[in-house]
Image (tube, rainbow over all chains, first blue to last red; front, side, top):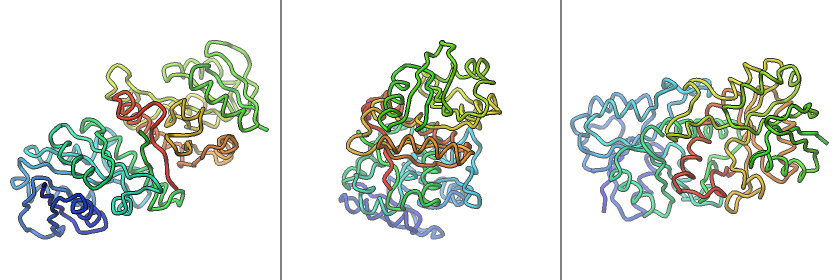
Length: 190
Length: 190
């Protein structure tokens, strides 16, 4: 059993906590501004992109040695027309640079909360794409995902976070533009 | 009925020609190095990324006024670890700059040839994502796609080509890494 600490109690944090417990693992939820200690070896930062750097600064030592999951879509939500990270960067790469002692993964940013809660995108099983440089860290998260009945796919190294953030970006623009519902989105057929 | 000229007779060119005729439209296929005149108002450049600039140079005047579709994934196929276009660019944006009198669309780069031929990704209807700045041009292509029984989705302005190329990139790495089959890949649930 893995203890997963989730910082952030919004829609995504709640959906991820539900997924964790559905699979028989244990979830610790911590409010975004709460300074409770993080107990899990797997820590999901279920917060918006602008909140990442303050959390990294405040919890750098505490997160050392842990697996830290970045779920953000660093979108300019004023325009829905660009990301706010530099074009050759990603939110996950920035977080990894800010947390050099942690093993950072990118995951869940291509999933809407409703599809994590239901395990379905339309009538398909929800796929969680995970990118990161540490194989053991990815295996730990993928196990939690698959134990909940979702499909987990290793999308490659942390360099692929840039492409996952592009995918999340397109999916958000499609939902905001009402081309898809917030219960729909991308699925991946094997 | 739309006459669609397809330059390139590889797997993708053949699959797109099949899609065009399946929907009751007419396809003209032209070999990559063939200098036959392009008759269609809709022209699909079904060639690899490195071939685009020579075609644009050779056919700039001929393609003026036409809708030109870029289907490329400008991937470094040696490493499968980066794109060969600058991070703030896209193959489609480069093509649009090279063909200033044409209406350039990005499409089909997120579809494997087999899924265009069958109309299915796994057991789901194949979705063709189309990006471009000209609404009439997008409507023309989307009609051809939907007449063939596939799902066509307007993914936004040509700026979104960058994200579609990221999506194509991830999908190619997943197939090359045997995480998905060449008959699988991303689908989009409404």
